[in-house]
Amino acid sequence: YNDWVSVGNLEQFPAGETRLGQYRNPDGTPADGQTRTLPCWVRHIANNQFQVFAINCAHMECPVHWFPASRLFMCPCHGGVYYKDGTVAAGPPPLPLPRYPVRVKDGEVQIQTSPIPITTT
Image (tube, rainbow, N blue to C red; front, side):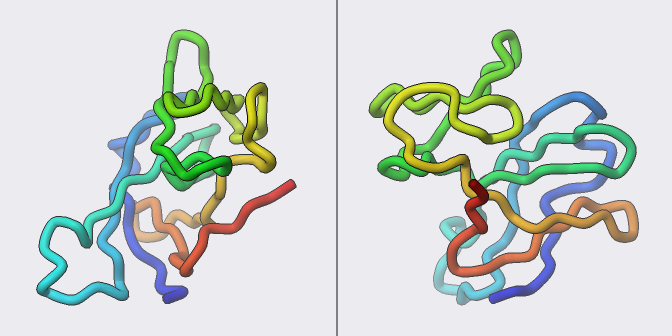
């Protein structure tokens, strides 16, 4: 763990938008197959400023969905709602969406993997 891995190149994430990214779990094995590829939400704020969120709700770990029209993440399981910056807007989540450390290097958006993404308050 704690490897820097790519979630995609800069062109995949236009400024001002949030899009689905994916990365390969560096702790996996060849036997993991497709399950080694994990999704994440990539928010391109501006210039080289990004936020990358785990796809799972902080309440019961159901996958959250991004709704561009309302600019909200929503959890279909128990009604959790998050603002575009991952902070809780409504519902049962006790914490913001878990967030990965992020950097831009060699034209790629990269995250630092860990067993559990960092949750900020």
